[in-house]
Every structure is written in C-alpha cells, then in structure tokens.
Image 1 (cartoon, helix red, strand yellow):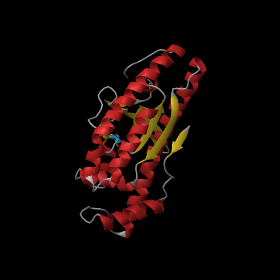
Image 2 (cartoon, protein in one colour):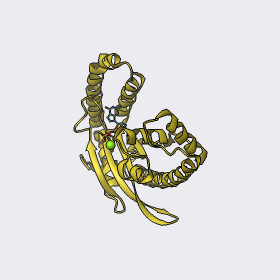
Image 3 (cartoon, helix red, strand yellow):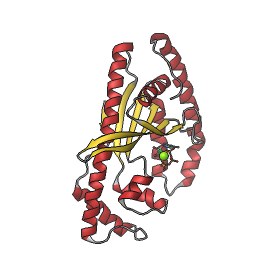
Image 4 (cartoon, helix red, strand yellow):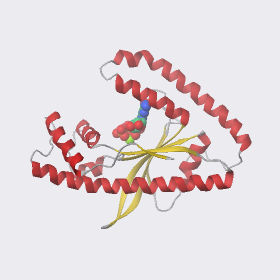
Length: 246
Ligand code: GTP
Ligand code: MG
C-alpha cells in the first residue's frame, strides 16, 4: 500500500509559494519580478517532474519485490510505503540554512531528499532484506548509506537511510535522479512520528523537548528490544534468506 503524502503541485501553487517566500524571507535572494517568478516556477515544475518519476520508479520496484517475496515465502516484508516530494518552502529553507542560492542548479547539486520514500516493515530482517534486494538492482546506484539501526542517533532515532540514484527516461532522454529511501520497522516509525511531533510542536519550547528526552530514549531502546524478540519468533515461522546489512 502506497500513501502519497501530498497532492501534485501546479505551476500556480509553485509561483504562489515563491512569491510568499520573497516576502517572508527578505534576507533570501528569491526571484522578485513576476516574470522571473513564473520562469523559475516553470523550471521548478519541470525539475519536480523528474523527481516524481524517480519516486515512482523506486516505489514500483519495491512493490514488485514485496509481491514476489509474498509468493515465495508467504510473507510481505513491506507493511506500507509513504512518499512525498519536498515542498518549495522546505527546499528554500534548507538552501537558506546552508547559505546556498535558490536556483535550479543549486537545488539539484545540494539537496538529495527532494524525492523521499519511507518503507515501513514488520521486522528488522525485512528492512535489510528489502533494502538489499533493491540495492543489488543493476540500474540503480547507491550514493549514500546511513545505518541508524546499527548506530542509532542520540535521540534514540533508528532507521536505515539510503540515497539511490536512478535513471528516469524523460522526453529529452535519460536523467539520473536521486531518491532518499528510509527503511524502518513499524515501531521505529511510531517512535519517530511522536518524537518529530514533539520537536515540531516545541520549536519555542526547548524545556518541553528536554523534559521528554530521557523517556523517548528509553522507549526507543524498549521498542528495539521488542522488535528483536518478535523477530525471533517470526524467524521460527518463515524461512527466508537473511541479510544483516546492505
Ligand atoms: P539532511 O540535510 O536533512 O539530510 O540532514 P542529515 O543528512 O544530517 O540527516 P539524515 O539524512 O541523517 O536524516 C534526515 C531525515 O531523517 C530527517 O528529515 C528525518 O526524516 C529523519 N531523522 C533523522 N534524525 C531524526 C530524529 O532524531 N528524529 C526523527 N523523528 N527523525 C529523524
Ligand atoms: Mg540527509
């Protein structure tokens, strides 16, 4: 099951967002002129088309793997998939945070999570199985791997992050486009959603974040222990080849 976390963007949405950015971020070099904004909006829309294609290509690969795995081992490694394209606002925010210009080249050269896919699995074994099968495919390249399952963040955050590059065949020919895939178990996702919400809702309230930090760290460890216990039961029921890295 794939959940799209946003509606497709229209050129009007993009130009409106850029115009709003010019006003709300005066320190930022956004195109001011109406014509400039429309030109940027058109180029941005074309750029996003490529990222959308790359996101669809990887999603389809994941669905094919999940289907075949089910047929072979009577188990679906993927519980569900979520995907989204980064909004104009967060792209601009990220560039601004790193003192980079808001233009098409700068977006393409500096931001690798514009196309984002989150793959939720039942068990840790599933995370590594599906990530390894995808990573071995001959038409995609791995640009970066961050294994926060083996090396969790200080917050307690766990997930396997991989940035892939995949060729997308557009009207002008093939273009290699990056997609960030975050693989995690359902319990890692449940934890990350709450922790993200706490931080998001507490931007001006660091005391609240600090107050819950220890509880969240403890919960992350307990959830991981439960993931391992349930996985061990599941191993007794399903005999599929196991991988523990990609
Ligand atoms: P970026 O420039 O954002 O890519 O920073 P980075 O490369 O240092 O971070 P990384 O790619 O490792 O992780 C970025 C994404 O992982 C975030 O957008 C979140 O979705 C997720 N993430 C990373 N750390 C945490 C965390 O501590 N809590 C939660 N809830 N999510 C996290
Ligand atoms: Mg990153």
